[in-house]
Length: 207
Image 1 (cartoon, one colour):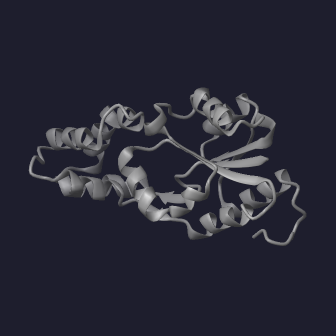
Image 2: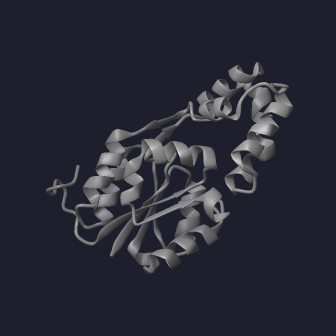
């Protein structure tokens, strides 16, 4: 078995953090710059699953004096910068048609964004492995999250390719023995994946 593991944000799903900040800031009647500091205060804890969405919302309401806002409204705004990348998701499904090829995902995320993914990206259910940072209490580039992936997959690291838009995360995956690709755009990432999988250029069934 060979496994191609993908980051989610800005690899399989488009994520615009600036748009997210703007949406929440507008809701709370503050500037995006002011809100960025508030995010940073609890962002790591949210990403590790140490606080709940309601606790995150409470922090936003307290720091911005937007006490009347419902958590549902804040969570909707938190997802304003997220959208499907249909072409990327279709490509992964095409890879899964190849013999002995599985897909995985490792994402630094939070419970609110996981809820959005559950609703809008049903393709993740076909992946052999999905590790969300808030569910496992680990954030990339901590090597432990990559070691956990190998343990759960029960596969040698040489049989795993990891793809992320952040070089530091790719380097962490490579440090545990995985192959790695720093994703910039799909025009360059696709042929690198296919080279690693030993797929001839223009091979049938691969975009």
